[in-house]
Image 1: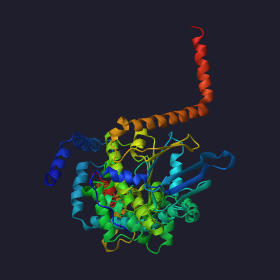
Image 2: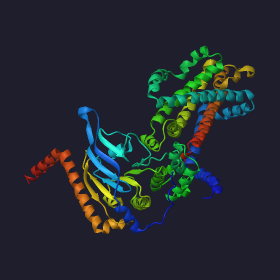
Image 3: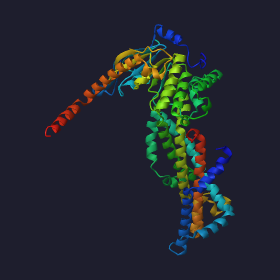
Image 4: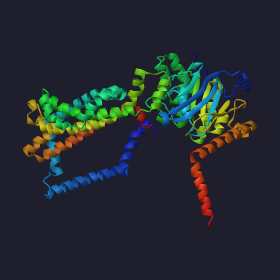
Length: 304
Length: 272
C-alpha cells in the first residue's frame, strides 16, 4: 500500500492541473440502464429508471437534482448496499455486487462510530483487515494532521463540531485508499460559514489527490465550485437529464462561481433544467389540486 | 478553569444553588412532619428521633451488619449471574433471527411471571435456601438485562454496519467493534434497572423464606428483609424503620456504584 502524499502547498501550479484535466478520461464507474423499484409487483414504486452515466477516473462528478429524486438510492446502489432491479453497475470493469473499500461513502449525517475516538475511527479500516501496524498508524497520524484534527485524536465524535466530524470521516475513508469517493450531500446541515470552509477544504483536498469522486448535492453553487462534470437529474424516477462539463481552471475560488461568466452560464442552464423538473413534478403530483385552486379562485373573484 | 480548583468550585456551586436548599428544606419538613404525626399519636409509626437512637445502637451490632452482608451478597451474586447469562443471551437473540425465533416465545411466556411467584418453587428445587433466594434475585435482574440488550443491539444505526462493511469489516470484527460497544449503553441501563428489581425481590424473598441459613448469627442474621420481618414479629417498631432505611441506602449505594461503572464503560457518552 502506498504512503499518503504529504500535505502540499495550498496552491499547486495551475498549469499542472490544466494538464491533468485535458488527458483523455477513462471511465472508472459505469452505470448502464439501471432501474430500481421498491415493493412487490403491481405496487412497486420505481425510484430510478433506465439511468446511465459514467464517472471518469480522476475527475469530480457532481450529481444534482430535485430533492427526493432518487439520488440517495443511486448512492446505495453504487456503494453495493442494494442491488439494482435491472441494469448493471461496474467499477474498474468489475460488476458491483457488495460493499467494498474500493468505493467509500460519506453519508449525509455522520456515520462515525460514537464509541471510538477520532483516531480509532480512522484506524477502523486498517484494523478490520488486520493491517493496523506501524505503517497504518503513521498514515492515521498524517491524515489526522492533514484534516486538522491532530489535537483532537483522543476526542469522541460527539465532542467534535459538525465540520470536524466531516473531516474525521473524510480521513477515515481516505486511509483505505478507495478508488472512488462517494459523497451524499456531505455538507448539508452545516452552518453557512462552516459549509464554505468545508467546500474550500474539500476542493483543495481533491486537487491534491485527484481521487475519482462522485458528489451528490442540491446546492448549485457547491456543484459548480467543485465539479468537473455535472449530471442534472430528472424528477423521480431518476434519470440523467443533462450532462454539463465545468471547465473552470483549478484551483478555484468560491468567488469564481459568482464572478466568472462561464460559471454563471452553467448556473443558468442548471437552474432552468431544475426548474423544469420541479414544474413537471408539480404538474404530476398536484395537477388536480392546481386546477381546483385555479377554478376556486376564479369563482371567488366573480361576485365582487 | 484549572483542574485543581474545579472540584471545590463545583462543590461550592452545588451547595450555593437553590436546588440544593430546596432539597434540604424538603427533607427537614418531611422529618418534622413525621415527628409530629408520631408524637400526636395520629399514627403508631415510631418518631424519627427514636429511630435515630435505635440506628445508633445497631451500628455496634454485628448481626445487623451481617444482615447487610447477606442481602448484598444475594443481590450481587444473583445480579452478576443475570448479567453473565443475560448479556450473551440478549446479544445472540439480537444477532440471530433463528435463535430469536426459537428462544423468544419461551422467554416471553416466562417473563410475566413475577420473580416472587418463583419463591416456593425455588425453595423446593434448589438444594439450599441461599441458592433459592439468589435464583429469585437472578430472575429479577435477568429479564431487565435481556430485554435491554436485545433492544439496544437492534437499535444500532444501519449506517454503522454499512460503513464497517465498506471498510472491509465482517463477521466477528463487526460483532466485536460495532455490535458490542453499540450495545454497552443499553447494558448499563439494563443493569441499573435490574439491580433495582433485585433489591425489591431479595427483601420479599427473605421475608417469605425466613431468611435462610443464618448459622451462628442467630435469627437476626437472615438478611435485611428478614431483619425487618423479625423486628415486626418481635414488636420492635423502630427496628422496622431502620431496616427500611437500610434497604434504601443499600439500593442507593448499588445504583450509584453501577452508574459509576456505567460511566467508565461508556466514556463516549460523557460530557466533554
